[in-house]
Length: 373
Image (cartoon, rainbow, N blue to C red; front, side, top):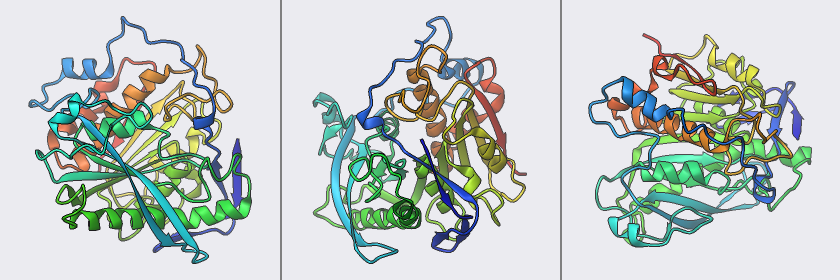
C-alpha cells in the first residue's frame, strides 16, 4: 500500500521540490473499506483523561479528551484556485466543523459529517482559533470525523479541503507517479489558499463565519500524505501556523532538512505501521535542528489507520492484536486538543496535560517531549 516518488525533498520557500530520496505516499481507502472493531476497551483500565485528572491539579482546565462545551456545526464551502504546477482550476469542496450556538444541541447531527448542518456559530467564546486538516493520499476530508468534530466541540474551527486529483474519488489506487508528484507540489498551496479564503469570509457580513474566525491563532494538521503536507508547512521560514500536528507522516522525506520545524510540533506514530513506519518519525523528533517544542506520541500496537474513523483491514491488522480503534481515537483527541489548546489557543492551563510523567502505566501509549529552555 506504499507508493514511492523518487526524489529528495528540499523545502524551499513556498514549494517542495523533489530530486533523489524516496518520498512515501499513502493510499488511504478507508471510506470504501469496512471498519473493524479492534479488541475492545478494558473497562477496568482508567482512560488517559481519568488518569491525568486524578494525578494533577489543572486549574479548572476542562478535560481535553472529553467532548467540549459546544455543539458541533458543519458546513461545506467551495473554493477554487489555479494549480501551482499547471495553472488548471483546482476546486475545493471544503468541509468545515465549528462551535455552534447552544440551540444546535437540539438539532440532529448528520451521521456522516458528525455535526448539525449549517447551524449558527456560537456567539460566545469567539472569534475561534482555526485548525486546518489535510487528508491522506486517496483520502477524503471526512476520513477522521472523530477528530475534526471533537476539536470543534472544544472551541476550534476545523477546515478540511480536498486535494484535487488525490482524493478517493480521483484515484483508487493512487499509483500514478506524475499525479502523486503533482499533488506533493500543490498540497501546501491548497492549504494556505483555503485558509486565506476562509479568512476573507470572516470579513464578509453575508458569511456564516462573519467575525467568527481568529486568523492570529491557526494550527495545521494532517494524516499520512497530509502529515507530510503538515511537515512541509511547519518547515517554511514564513508560516501562518502557530503549531502543527502530523499523524503517521512519511517523515523520511524531510529528515535532514535545514530546519525540520519552525513552530511547535507534535508527531503521532504507530509501532505496527508498515505504511509510514515509526523510525523516520522518531528521527524527525530527535533532529537537533528544531528550536521549538516537540512532542512524540506513539501507539505501540497502532497501525496506519488508527487515525481514521474505521480501521482498514487491507492496510492494517485490525483484530485483537491491534490497539482498539476507540481507544486510539480517545488518545488522539486527548493529546491533539491539549497540544492545540496550549500552542494555538494560547491556554497555558492545558500544558499540564502534556507532561510525559502523567502518561505512564498504559501499554498502548509511549510519549516523549522536548521543550528547549
